[in-house]
Image (tube, rainbow, N blue to C red):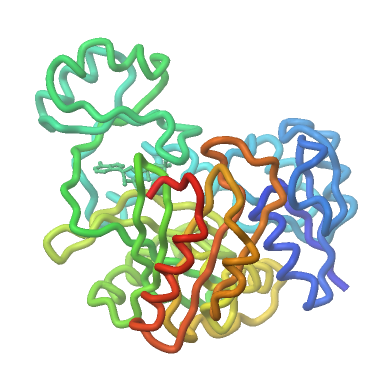
Length: 364
Ligand SMILES: Nc1ncnc2c1ncn2[C@@H]1O[C@H](COP(=O)(O)OP(=O)(O)O)[C@@H](O)[C@H]1O
Ligand SMILES: [Mg+2]
């Protein structure tokens, strides 16, 4: 019997725990929030992520450890790694949490990316704007998510004082990309180097926030995305699921960012793939063989923000699944997701329309 430690007990920890259970794998999650939404299903240590004693205690209770997100202090990751194997490796977390490190890695691995500059002062920013041009996006190097810690600079007026507006933190400036599509590639790798990839996922964001993900079997950029994602995973000696977000521009891929973990754009895999991203992550981390990543049928995932849908109506739609994260609803807070699946795209479209009618106060 394996016990898996997870730093973080939000919805990702929760869905990992739910995927681990049928495999006979118990989880212990560490999370500062007493009512974290994953704690109902596994053991829960209430502690801050920088609490090294708590990390040591987590390590004592588990055989192997993983993470729900990348913003775990490196000292805490090191503390865990002293006592148990941790996957993905510390270097993957360190790279993914820092946009400059991440983009430097893409460059080193010959993966195309938008023009980018490192910004530590307003002078750096003024200089970078002269080189990269406008529009451009200023992003904090660390701790950004869901479009937070970002500012789109459209004209010179936006440039003045922009660095201070983002708290004068270390930043990167990125050229604005007029993409035709945003896609993510979800890959999974075992310690022995076996890799599998899910079908490329087409993602729709609103104000930097993901609201719709749909796999696109047969996408013409599939093998290129797998090549880039595999390069990063191999370089980092990665174990577990990794998501790589790309911009599609003129039939090519430009790297945006990696997430060293299971990812929102892979939630559709629970119903829509032979093996979910959560199960494959657990399998990889616990040293088990990977399951098939094949897409089962037409499927789409919708995030739900702020308010629960009309669940009774939603579940009366054939092929609709509701995942409630059991969070207290607040405006703009992600509280669950809907997966819709059907035998073909035409049927799926009808189902999606019906499901959208059950959503209240949604962004789209
Ligand atoms: N350089 C860019 N050009 C155009 N759109 C961008 C750019 N950078 C980010 N965006 C938009 O904002 C979203 C969130 O940005 P991202 O860098 O992925 O940060 P986060 O960590 O918040 O996911 C992207 O998915 C994309 O829709
Ligand atoms: Mg992103």
